Each structure stands twice: as C-alpha cells, then as structure tokens.
Length: 549
Image 1 (spheres, rainbow, N blue to C red):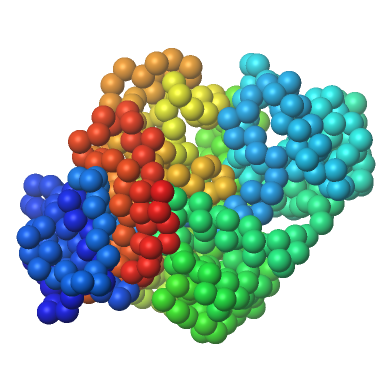
Image 2 (image 1 turned 180 degrees about the vertical axis):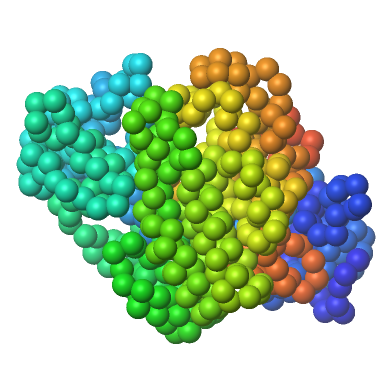
C-alpha cells in the first residue's frame, strides 16, 4: 500500500480498483480494494484493511459495492463550448425518416415560438433510403416559413430549407474557400446541402449569438453531463482567447469542476502571426483546472461528405479524392513555427492522404528544429495507409482517436461510411490495436459530434467485430479490437500523458490528483455487451464529489 500518515477525508471501500498503474509484463492490470483521499490528492491505494486504518471520525465513507473504481476519465477530443450550445438545439441523434424529423422540429418550434431560426443537431447521413441526399425541398416539407438548419452529427455538413438559403443570400450559390462547397442542384439553385465550415458559416450567421449568461448556463449543464459518466478532464479541441477567458470566468466563480486543456484553433486564412495568440493563451493563465499550450488545425473534412482527403478516389464518386485544407507548404511552415515555439500541435486528419501530409509536416518540423518531447498528435486517423503506420513510432506522434466513430454496423450509424471506401481498405480503417502497438493511443468522444458517454466508446473498442460488407452481419472479432484494460488506459493514463500531465493524473496512486470515477458496475465481470449501459455512481474531481447518481 502507498500512503502517508494522515487520516483520509474520503475512503472508497468494497471496490474493484483499476489503478491504470504498473501493468505486469503480461500486460495484466493491477487491482486494489480501496482508495483513500485527503484534500485534492490520493492518500493511499491498497487493501481494504490497510486503507481502513486511515479512517477517522470525520472521514466520508463511500461503499463502491464491488463496482469498478478507476481514474477519472480523460476525454482527449472534446468540444465543450460547441457541445454546450448544441444542448439548446433540436436533438436529432438517432432520429431517422422525414416524418420523425418533422415531429421533432415542430414540437421544438411550439416550445420555442420566439426563435427566428431553428437549428437541429446530430443528424445522421442515412435519413433517406438508398443513401439519397437531403434537399431544401425535403426541409421545406418539414418547415416552410422559419429558416431551418439541420447539422450533421459530425459538424461537416448541414442541410437548409429555402427560407434559410434565401435569407443567407446563397439560394443561387456562393463561392467558398478551402474544400467547402455549396452544393448546387440541376435547376441552377442551391440544393440545400452545405459541406464544411466555410459553407455552413454562411447560414450560421443567421443564428443569434447566445448571450454570455446563456453560454455560462449551458456550459455548466454540459459539465454536469460529463460528470454523469465519470469524466473529470477534457482536451477541448477548439479555442481562442475569448473562449479561454469564458472558462476563466467559470473557474473564478467556483463552478469549473472539469479540467480543461484548450488549444488555439488555426484557420487557413489566418496569418502566421496568429500563432502568437496560442502563446498568449498559454502564458496568460494556468491553473489546476485550466491551461493552454496547443495549436489545432484541420487538414481535411470527413469521408461521409467526400471532404476527407484521400490517396485514392472515392469508390462512390471517382471524380474526387477530397481536398486538403492546408497545402503541404503551409502546414510545414506552421508546424515548424509552432514546434519551435514549444507548442504541442494537434491536426484533424481523417483520410489517409490527410494523415500522411500531417506526418510529413511533423517530420519537416523535426528535421528543421531537432527532436524534442513535443507529443504532437494526429486526431481521428479513420483511414491509414500501411506505409504510414510505423511513422507514428519513428516521429513519436500520438494517435488521438474516437472509438465511437467506428461503431458497430449492426447497431449503429457506420454503414454509411462503408459505401465510401473499398472492402480491401477496411483493414486500414480505425487501426486502434496497430497504433497502440506503435505509440501512445489516447481516446475521446469528439462531443458533440457523437454522444459524450465514454462507455459507448469503450463498448465500440472492446466489442469491435470484422466488417464483411456494408449492411452485413460481422462474423468475428476484429484484430483492431482492444482489451478492456487497454481501452481504459487510453481513456485515463494515456490521456494524461498526451497533455503532459502524467505526473498528476490518469492513475490511482498516492500523490496523484484525486480524480476518481466510481462506476455503476464492475466492468471486468460485466457481460461485454452491457458496457454501453454503464455510467458513474459517483464522480470525484480534485477530492470533491461533483456527481452522485
């Protein structure tokens, strides 16, 4: 047992404790029976009898019921402010068919008659049969008067009714930069489909900005929702000084109970001088709950909207390989500058060409600046060319992935993805185990792109099965599936390492921050098919109980 002589403020007993620390040579996880907390840190982890010796009359006792106790979950890819604002929209996650969407939209409209624009979130791509695309006429049949904007679950496509296109002045089309597009129909007018941020921003401007009070309220709601699932830290994958200052306001009010690592988001039209804002964020404010120090870019879009940057043409549209948001010269220059300034770099790269260009940029920066402990990251990595797999180890690049993006075809939305790549590339998709063998693999959700519930991601990683064609039942476990211990490590210890915080969190060990999740079941004895039903019974952040079911 690791301990000091002090008495505990909190003791968690009768537990099955996954410490995420000191794995055996056979890669077996260590377990303990109880955890003691004093102040904001772990006092001791060990046997129940030893830990109970640290009890005093004032110790708060928590009986874990033999359930899993683990380090607080670190979601390594999260959009807190986007997700918070998303809570104020029509929620369309899992809703399919025009009639069902109409019902949700009209019910929302009745509840919010004051709205001048209706926005829906988390819409799937498989609304219509045979992978047909939504049009403005479809949306006009749902709502003809008030501008209606429905945003895809991945935030890379949106569909608008005629009223929205007209008010935005783009019914007859518009030129947009990067790989974005206003899709045109055969009648010479906009079809209603918008691809990528620069196109979607043309209609998002119609939506009134939330007030400061509304943003603060929604952020607190999102933080409480995260704690419900044992999340105590997130890497916030978009940010600027204004957003960073908003989080400071929440912390100074005593309401920031989730630890935030916030990068600066670099757009392709920004001048190189905007790199200074990332440095200003890093240097202006640091606390135990809020810090900056990273630089975030998007290299491509997503495969489902043909905006993922691919080495080979799409099988369902051979006229395109997608496109890159940053040229090779541009990202090489930015990577060298950011790396030289000591910033960590994170790049959204989904297609195999996007991943390769990102790795090329990291190699360019290393060759120019010399090797250092940079911990640069590639986000998503949905399709990876085999030649680029060993480069993650060679360049010490972290693989930051989101397992619920690769959900199971027989139960979730992935089937649409399978229409975009050939079957001989299935083995190159979502290569979790292969990357785990090469480098640090860290997991997150990409909230609000998908549900923030990490147990959906854990289920996807552990229960992943082979794909044998779109719409067919899998027949065997995928070689890219992970063990439960490997998956939990990617949500805890690896997440801490990714943000240079491995000395403070990600493990249950004496002296570490007391960020702890007490789950509603024992994950290690539970039927794996029931992992997705788990949530937290208790979440502790810095020694404070911030959620109790």
